[in-house]
Image (cartoon, rainbow, N blue to C red; front, side, top):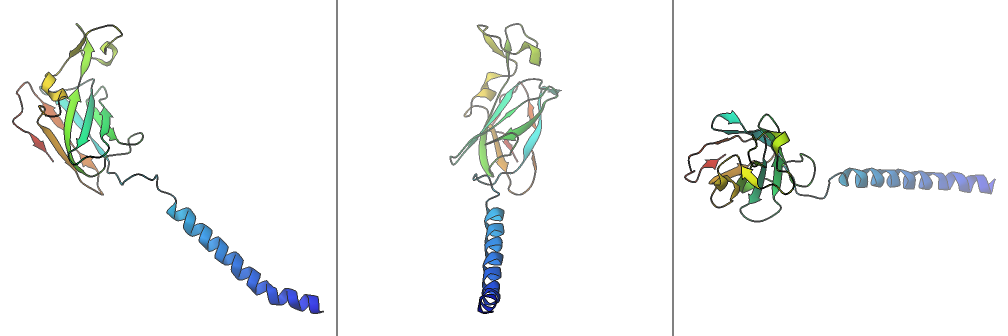
Length: 165
């Protein structure tokens, strides 16, 4: 009888420890869901050159105040999506300088199948100043907590410090 009484007396203590353990496990699991990187916002848009969608190319966003850059690849219809740490995971909010490159093989049309081949001299299908962070004139601001649609209408005219927001 004494053994049964001791079991019943201990039972509430065991139950409360179990509940506390499960509660702590839930809290730890919920707080561990992040990827360990700063928050990012989605960034996408289109790139056109002289009014037509750019068919090849890549973008690089370099933070003005330092930090990890973001990159994107132009799809065949001129559309791009930016990523910083993983596939299309967005960009850390802030101000960025932008460079855009679009290289093809000599004599190529700028289509994806004409991208630069080994041992071929690359040729830019857009003015080369767009591939220089300081000369491109492209600047963007990525806003936190919302999707950012940023289009780049490139032309043959040299930019006069174009600011895109």
